[in-house]
Image 1 (spheres, helix red, strand yellow):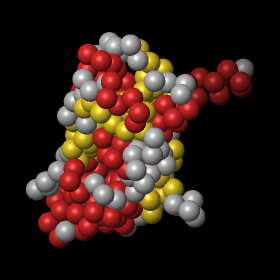
Image 2 (tube, helix red, strand yellow):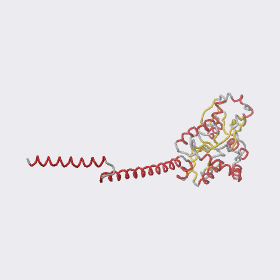
Image 3 (cartoon, helix red, strand yellow):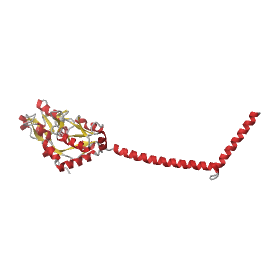
Length: 305
């Protein structure tokens, strides 16, 4: 019986407390319940305001971070190196007696890296995979006497043209008289660098060819007699075949086209604009011409502004 009375009293007390709470909530401005509600609302507003501020700050920070993340220049400066994709291509990129990379492109790339405040690093690539290497961040640019083809310009962010060039036919000197026009080339088997402008010209003229890894390899094929002829860049031909070169028994005859060299960065990269500014300054102060004269390519140099 005592338990039953105690239970009844407990239930009555609970009902009374609930009723008081209900009245306080229903009547703003009266009793401590109203004050509590105001404090909760104020706290909620403060939290919301603070949250909004935090969100705005976070958004601003993320926006800034996103901007930096989208900047190739910032990326290169942060890691401290400009990684340049090249092949062995005299007089643009080749090794000296000490094994260091030199050449017109190599020297200009090193100077550009210095202007960014970073070191330069040269990486030999498979020319046919240059776009894949670039997009995979294995390299930061392709700077190797690269012809500005439609494919290159659609796949990379390219600099202004800095050199003029052409694709020329290389044959043994004692057979040069036989191959002085495009029509005379139809029976020859050519060696061309895979993925190069030389390969594009072989295809454009319906010539029979064998792809090799580098233009220097194409010259070796002709020199060894395993290919009848090669198609390479005129700048390379001027430096590497004929009297006083390593291929004195070879010469160049037919010019197949006219083209321009440029440097390729990842699509949308801000480094292309930075390089254009560097080119313009180097052309204006004469350092670009001086470098070109060092490697015998001054006649091919394109005006920069």
